[in-house]
Length: 96
Image (tube, rainbow, N blue to C red):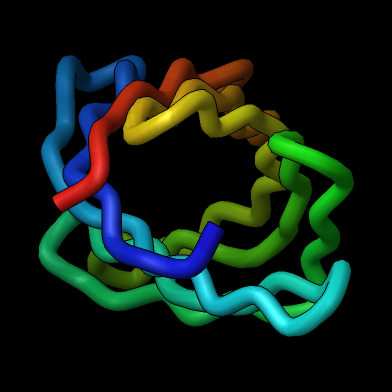
């Protein structure tokens, strides 16, 4: 699962482009979500087969938006949903 993916995230303000980088050690997952012109590091995630889950905060200007993301990777394609206080945000991407 290690690697960087170019992603698009459907937000209430429209489509946002960014990247997500995963680092896997055993079943543990960490990395960074780079979106809204900022880098948002996460750790404490987990991997089971081709499924992943992690939590963090998206920092946008002065706001911090907590989220929990769950998704899958098939081949070079990533699909996920980030659950936030603003609703569920769909994420799609492919290996960079």
